[in-house]
Image 1 (tube, rainbow, N blue to C red):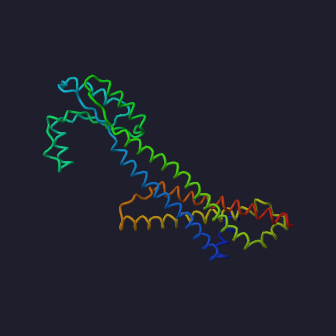
Image 2: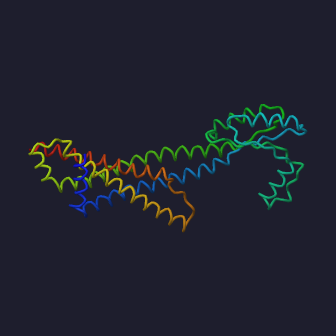
Image 3: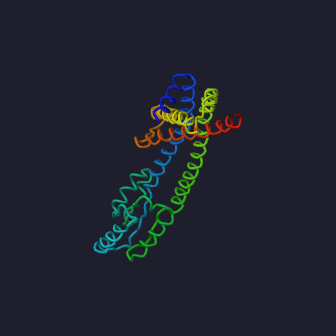
Length: 286
């Protein structure tokens, strides 16, 4: 193992420009993947922010007593889907309406605004089916006159999120495959540059594993270095967008570590595929 590691490090010393080209190529392929990841993360956070505004509003029957209201609030607050529940009095509803729709402030009258219960949902219970089921359950209470939650709006949010998840997964797989192919090509350049050395090792009886291991370690190192460089480029892109356009979210430390690990893994896989193909060709020729 130590001999293979030394050979892998010597490969960087023998051909520094080729090694630098390989690392740069890997970095830019992973940078494209990283940019896609940043877009996906920011879209996810934006959708979560919108989903967080999903709420169910239950309007009360006129003349509802405080005891009945307190009992219903307690029941609804105990539902597993409910994150927060609160009572909005007619006066509070009037003040909020006048603040949010200032141009119509003179139109609103407390006498036409009933008291209501506002229910905010936990994450994972904001899809149309869950919201509809909760609304039907709340509507069964005698003191509830009507329940609304913006059914069409909730359905559209859920549809956008579903499309984003499937599109993100598909594009992520495509980017990963492209990265493997590019990394494999860069490792193949290194293999071809040492083709004569491989043939000599084959003639003196070197096994497949002995020949392959230094290249696998080299691919692992190049992938990790390319991953680090891709993270740096992604951070520069994130900073530029945040300063000139709008605030964006960057990768967490665990996501950065996973990105570097992914680069090392892709480098290893690319090297494995490239070296294996070349060694089979050499073995046939000899």
